[in-house]
Amino acid sequence: MEDACAAVPRFADVPVRMLAGRRELDGLELDFDATSLRLPAHLFGVYDGHGGSEVANYCHDRIHVVLREILRSKMALTDLEEVDVQEQWEKAFGDCFQRVDEEVSGKASRPMLNNGVEELRFEPVAADNVGSTAVVAVVCSSHVITANCGDSRVVLCRGKEPIDLSIDHKPNRKDERARIEAAGGKVIDWNGYRVSGILAMSRSIGDRYLKPFLIPRPEITVVPRAKDDDCLILASDGLWDVMSNEEACRVARRQILMWYKNNDVPHPGEYGEPTMNPAAQAAADCLVRIALTKGSEDNITVIVVDLKQRKKPKAKS
Image 1 (tube, rainbow, N blue to C red):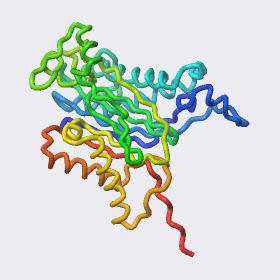
Image 2 (image 1 turned 90 degrees about the horizontal axis):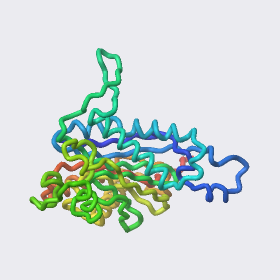
Image 3 (image 1 turned 90 degrees about the vertical axis):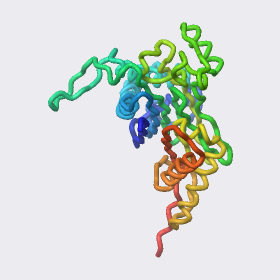
């Protein structure tokens, strides 16, 4: 198993100015400075390794730590108020993925234990043909922010409609192919389109032997939450190779509601803090089983995040 997944509740506090622009904040009639507010955020990630599990496991351990450090450093900056929200997250996630990629390759120091003492060393995490995708969702009470690097995917199930929050990084994607060829690389159709005839994705963390054609830069989506948001699905391509976004959302939504019904728990109410509760876990397990039944031959890792808040039962008098 070369995949890894992470769920980190309340991993960081996000400055509200990274969620609402200066214009929106100035329009609020408040008796305090809204730009000083911070919202607790939760992080979920799926990392699909190839060539070995080392890079996927390293992403599991480090991406949320590095992103937390970046967000904390941004809290002290006042010039963020003049920067577009999308640009702020592109910078934060871009710096995060670049830093982790450099640590993986040994170009940047990384924390390592030596006889129980943590030291910073410049040492590659794995061989140069080992890499991983990374699809990450940061969820707070007002927004969902996603970052994707590779061909894992995140989909928002809103009402009865799936909303793509990422676009797969495939070598035959027109813009990706142009970028690879501009860097001197080739996209070869060898049992599917592959970079240099080897790797069937155009971005990743690691994979030193295919740089500069493969890059770790993620693409970012910032979406305000809505009351009809049901759940998020983050998964490796082992799921998406055999299941459409529509089917995955339909299955996840049905399984979550069935779990509440079968366990005599009130149905979800309005949206609240995201959770990987037993209902969401049941949905993720069901998606994996269906993908296996459909003949998926790749590793399958799925996270389902329940975006609804359960209604609390009334106390009996």
